[in-house]
Image (cartoon, rainbow, N blue to C red; front, side):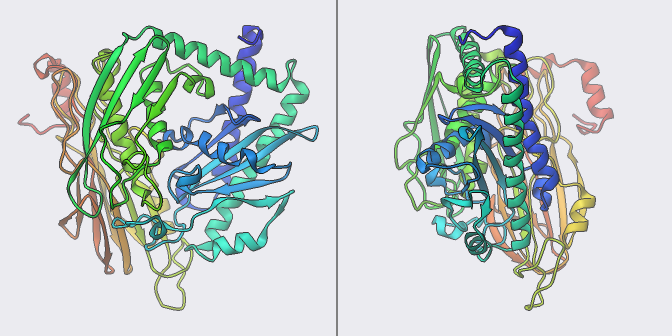
Amino acid sequence: MSGVDPVTLEVVRNQLEGVATEMGQVLIRSARSPNIKERRDCSTALFDREGRMVAQAEHIPVHLGAMPRAVETVLDRDLVPGDVVALNDPFAGGTHLPDVTLVAPIAVAGEVTGYAVSRAHHADVGGATPGSMPAGATEIYEEGLRIPGVRLVRGGEMDEDLLETVLANVRDPEERRADLRAQIAATDRAGERIRELAAESEVGLETAFDAVIDYSRERIEGELEGFPDGEYCARDVMEGDGRTDEEIPIEATVRIDGRRMEVDFAGTASQVAGNVNAPLAVATSAVYFVLRSVTDPEIPPNHGCYAPVSVEAPEGSLLNPRPPAAVVGGNVETSQRVTDVVLAALEECVPDRVPAQGQGTMNNFVIGGRGGGGSSGDVDGTGEEGFTYYETIGGGLGGRADSDGIDGVQVGMTNTLNTPVEALETEYPLRVERYGLRPDTGGDGEFRGGLGIERAVRVETDAVVSLLSERRRTRPAGAAGGEPGATGENLIDGRTVGAKTTESVSAGATVTVRTPGGGGYGDPTERDPEARERDREDGKVSDGE
């Protein structure tokens, strides 16, 4: 350990996490797009000069676990104070193109001591369809503008030529401009706060960084030491890739050896033609999330927490694709299945810590006009309204060993809020016709699975709809004898459409997303009769169940 006394360590840890959290607050409050300011589809973190994560805010799991790869990409760029690097290329440290990452060196007394990092999902980054999530994409070029890691800000001055080049390739450029500036403001705030800490702290920054990382590593290694050594395997499938409906297997072997955990995805399918390929950083992020879920949640999430974990996937596979593979669905959907598979593998190892499966999808819902106006429905010269609405929709959390699942929440690799109906209808030419829980969708068990959601939106202008979802054919599994949750369903004007689809719709069309429920936990005959009665009274189940 670092030799920092426990009281000082706790103070320093909270200070660093407070800086990461304040970064997020600045980003959310400064952003223009509802996707960031309302849904909070963004993440912030601090890194030391070696590229080790020191602290993160409690934001989006799939963002945060993959951030270290982005920082690693820019470490050799000789960044100086005042620089800010932008990147979104999944093959150079990103996840999928809508997630734009900004990395800014933090200088104390003129010397770079660490990095402030923000990652935000931009509602559109160009590509074949509004929202940059075309269901049928076969190459990354169809998914939007690739930013490989370039200085957006040089020595404190915005590179206006580069910025204008980026904005010329996206829909709603003014919204993108505002959101990028919000990200820059977040990294600026981190620099201010770290310099204040450096001036006030009784221990040096490097000592503080080492201390919190060492503490997390010791804690997580202690947790792993308590797991039974062994090799644990599981398998599940993706429901097609947007080009075909053929099932795509994902296999994981988890090895626990003393104070280490290894996860090997050998046996997983080769990369596919469609867009559900996931960069290795995304698969690694899912593994990190699972580790956090089955160990003490009070362990600070930083480099030390993940140091005892290794993740491998064959090059050219679904979870380690070669460019120019399409990947936009891998970040949002395949990451969810990786989570399910690794949790299933650990069910034999630590059964009381693994819940029944949750909905296993983010239910990506994109509606966009082909015009080039703003989010408020500005009209361009074509007479069409330009806007891009993006949302992920919650569903059922699986039942657990001591409690029911939760109804209508984000599950697994996402942690966003919903877009409030008032905000959605103010910002876009859309109207919400239905929004509520789906009765009878949670799997039965001693502890019932959570319910899915139904969200129906009427589109008041000609538009393009893209849906990327899962668990439309395979039900989320129960655990310990519990029953599976219900599948989801996508509809356009009452007509069932595929799990992954892009369609043009006319004004007046209604798009409905019905999300899956969570699996139940434990023998249904053991459920408390009073709990069953409450389920009926609350409308969670039909009277006949």
